[in-house]
Length: 100
Image 1 (cartoon, rainbow, N blue to C red):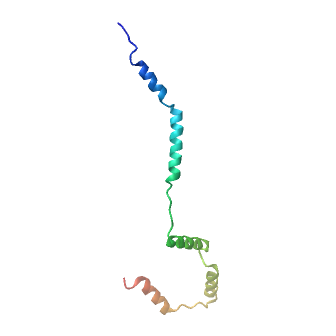
Image 2 (cartoon, rainbow, N blue to C red):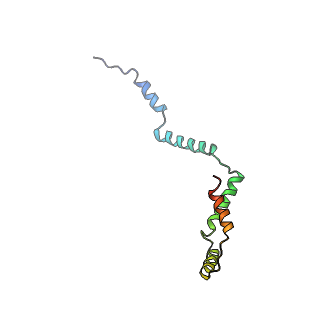
Image 3 (cartoon, one colour):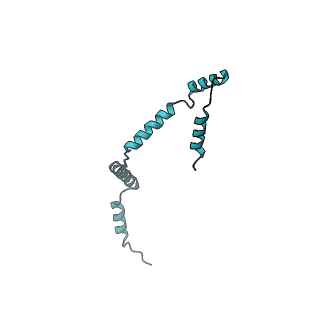
């Protein structure tokens, strides 16, 4: 049986022309970084969104209860000075539960 060396030279040349995997990886990473820099997504908030964000921030700064009002009403109730306007109460109840 005779073995010839035909074709092995061509394979050797192909390997020397190929770049190393490390170099390919480095180039690919550099290309990705450059591509990302060119195509970064950008977002712009509308004026309404900015206003809403500011309102939410200010709302978060307020106390949950209005302590001064609660203390005033509590003192009036304890002193027997708090009077309920039945007309106002009825109007409020109708606005909440009436005309559905």
